[in-house]
Length: 292
Ligand SMILES: [Zn+2]
Image (tube, rainbow, N blue to C red; front, side, top):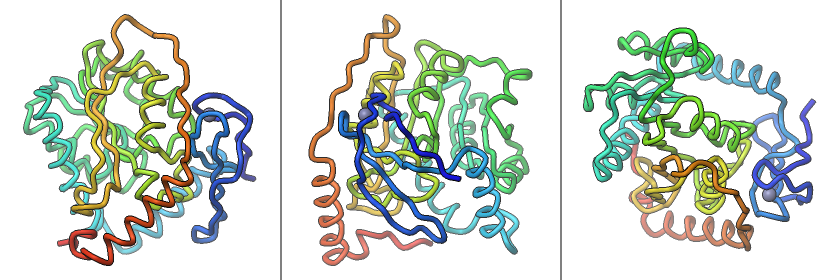
């Protein structure tokens, strides 16, 4: 049975109201907005066990008759790797030990490993994607806990591309990454769908981030943002479908966090989706890049 989320995952307030309700395949997806800070999160939502079962079913559907990632997956992941590489280059980030959480078919992992000549380790729970990545000669574990016995935890770059929105406790997870896996001068690279342009309300998305709420989550987890980009790469040349952040652990340890609420979230989403529809009509080929 889906569980109600009584506390906002960011500010812990117990006051929230209905934000969006829709049907996603056979599931009812309900998103709430925190009345205190404006974070949008799914509630009620599947329990961890239910989510595991859901992923297993979805993966079977996706992989019926397929031995590896689809053409669309590879196109998107290659394009994403180009864009993320560019952000690192602009900031002169040169990792020596790199961890990619949710590494999927391993394209980003391989790209960074080959470009920087760094050690590169991936985490990927999906069997088919993990097998595909391992077949490319990449070191990939099913779960972060599998690292503990075999690998040192001191990574100077951790990436999470389209992962954070799937996690039940994004603040806690990022804080653990900072404390247990990232060096004090290391980098965190994150990409999530943008609530103000992307449909976002999928059954597996626990949180739907705006640039503001993503910044708040990082702040509470002890990170400071160095770069924040809103962009559509590689799916769109003009729609700001995604938010990409490069962040560092905050100096001088944990500063006391005080939430800065976001206002007019519903209005910003309505306007963002209206703007998207207009751009799609006016510039269909720029709005959605054809998949080659
Ligand atoms: Zn809140």
